[in-house]
Image (cartoon, rainbow, N blue to C red; front, side, top):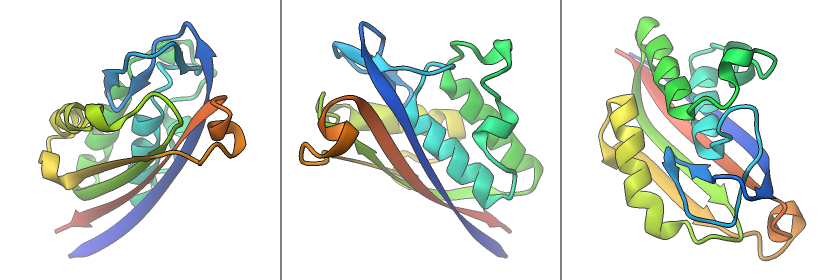
Length: 159
């Protein structure tokens, strides 16, 4: 059995009036993340971590922001394609551990729905997806509410 780990990190600016997609759901807020796709920072770090673990490069390689077909795309579609690429190489997702860094809005009430949606997209159990949220104690761009950051670590196996 081959066991591999992967790590992902991403940031997006926050802008007033944009929809805020996080973990595959729209979270009510006055500001949303700015990006070429729907700017779902949590899905993007999970994609990067999974791709890295399988030595499949990164999200920008597979879904470049210079390609018009990805403009405004639902990041769940990207995640589904990443899961397909892993399966094609014979990998299974063991677990995902992620952290969202954000001052507002409060993310904790939305975590169970995010887990449900992500588990459905990936075809794994909700219990295999950990999502945590924290602030940066008003420090840096996250603390000033200028952006959102996220991290993910994954474990994949090739039986």
